[in-house]
Amino acid sequence: MSASQKGPPQGQGQYAELVQRLGQIVEALEGGELSLETSLDRFAEGVTLVKQGEALLAQAEKRIEQLLSDDGRTAPLRLPDAAPAPAGPAPAAKVARKPTTGQDELDDVPF
Image (cartoon, rainbow, N blue to C red; front, side):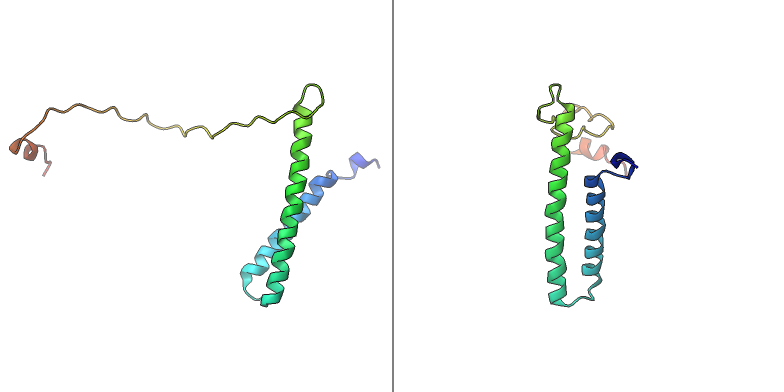
């Protein structure tokens, strides 16, 4: 069997394992059953795993940039600056009202 048929690419499998282990660590820490020393050890392990995950993601981003580049060299990946505004009703236009005095204002009250 060739390397391409063995399963997910090494980075993908490694990243999935990191995420799974981080989930286990979070669950253990949130359980509140660990000693302080064990909690600190798990937290340190989690920080290390997060750094490894960030490195894997940076490698993946670099690879994506290379794939999107026309000449094969790294090109900056262009992402939108902000998410599009949610679709919804347009803001209501302001309606000019004529100035009212005293009793006229009371006549506008619905009760």
